Amino acid sequence: MSAVEVMPAQLLAGLELALQARGLSLDYADRRALDSVHLQVPSRRVTALIGPSGCGKSSLLRCFNRLNDEIAGCRVGGEILLFGDDVYAGAIAPPELRRRVGMVFQKPNPFPQSIVDNVAFGLRLAGIRSRLELDDRVEAALRATGLWHEVRDRLAASALQLSAGQQQRLVIARALAVEPEVLLMDEPASMLDPISTLRFEELVVALRERYSVLLVTHNMQQAARVADYTAFLHAGRLLEFDTTDHIFTNPRLRETEDYITGRMRETPLR
Ligand SMILES: Nc1ncnc2c1ncn2[C@@H]1O[C@H](COP(=O)(O)OP(=O)(O)O)[C@@H](O)[C@H]1O
Ligand SMILES: [Mg+2]
Image (cartoon, rainbow, N blue to C red):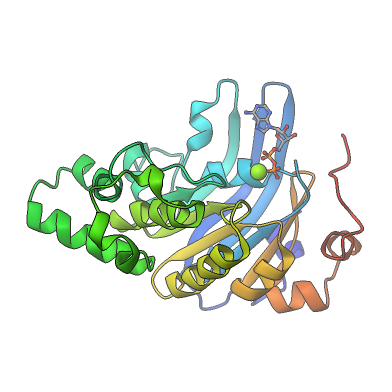
């Protein structure tokens, strides 16, 4: 299925594209997980990626910062572009790629270190030694996630003492500290309570000013609240891409409608 079939012509006309997947396929040792996926992720917008469990959302996200490289037997075909540069052609070394394209997972994964050391982690890795610069950038990242006033008095405390919602904002601060261009988020709010989820959604909307966000969510209301665009993935294929409004009010495909109205739960076995 080509890009033209997946989304209306002119939908993203004039927008800078942060990420593009072109004819992307992905095979694990014994099965194909993605098949000719064409996806365009516009810069400084939030794009939601939805679809039934097992349809390939996490696999697709991992292609964008080459996390699949770590999985034995996993083969990727087609092209991934980051602001026009081919990610798999080797022009961008994986560590640099992962700085530019940050990832936030479902389960908050702070390191068993202090709050400040968590946020400073990538900065130290990048060779920043100045105490003043580290402090400034840690504070800026914590402010950006709304966590600063909650933790400023206990920066040296263990990150593991924070609540799940705070931990998720902390790992987002850790990702932001190294000034990425894109944030990939894989069901980042699914383990948070309703209040933390609300705060998380406000954060995503605020991040949109500076970052390009690709957000996997199973929460349709969440997609509707935060995403400018929504992509529907089904059985390893990107079937429909449109404004979030359009996807939720007037989807083109029967499959999309079945999924968003809850009539479809599982990816059919192939
Ligand atoms: N590391 C892996 N090795 C083999 N198969 C995998 C691996 N990760 C995912 N898969 C398979 O690939 C398909 C897509 O999985 P995934 O990308 O995790 O889907 P989703 O995130 O949409 O639930 C599933 O059939 C899953 O079992
Ligand atoms: Mg997943």
